[in-house]
Length: 243
Figure 1 (cartoon, helix red, strand yellow):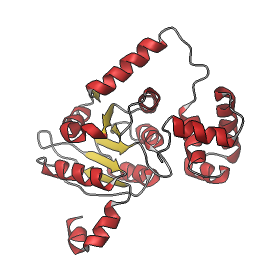
Figure 2 (figure 1 turned 180 degrees about the vertical axis):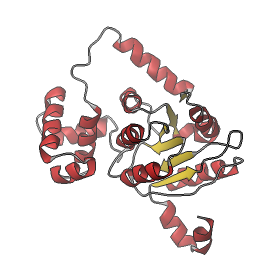
Figure 3 (figure 1 turned 30 degrees about the horizontal axis):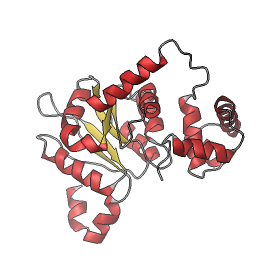
Figure 4 (figure 1 turned 30 degrees about the vertical axis):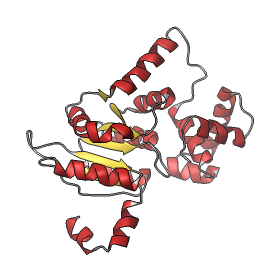
């Protein structure tokens, strides 16, 4: 990766960094560091975290990807110990990427990286299999500790996110979740809100057109909504997509 970036002009480097990307730290022996796969969507945040990670002894940035689907492919190819995944990615967001990585590579732990701390997002990523949740505002202070914690298969949450989880637990004690959306229903809504048609959604999620329509209908029923426009507003309001 060093050879390629050294040949890039400043404009080419900016365009490359402006893409949603995936960074990975290769496998090392105990005591030298940990594998990490990092996927980020904003140039300033990505470059900042990259410099922090590169400064850690034994860690090296070795690969990139432009969207969630490519990130999954890279993760399966390299099998990192830890995946740090930006929630807001094109095609497949952090929740769907987490679900697929954990299902197909269960030894890889996932740390979600996002600017949002809403309970619905925290709950969704944990249900998808993430072991940690890091806010972008806390990245410089906690990213190394977070990656190291997950590399030991231990959960990582900052105090702010822990408070959100506690409030959610206390607020939902004794209640049922019969109207809660499934993770796949949330993924379908997210893609609808991004402007994808049913056929595109089926291709992205590797499911049938009939299954997409079934998830859409179930989401409308559970949320007591009546149209695609309602689903889009729901997705925006609940931070399933970022504007």
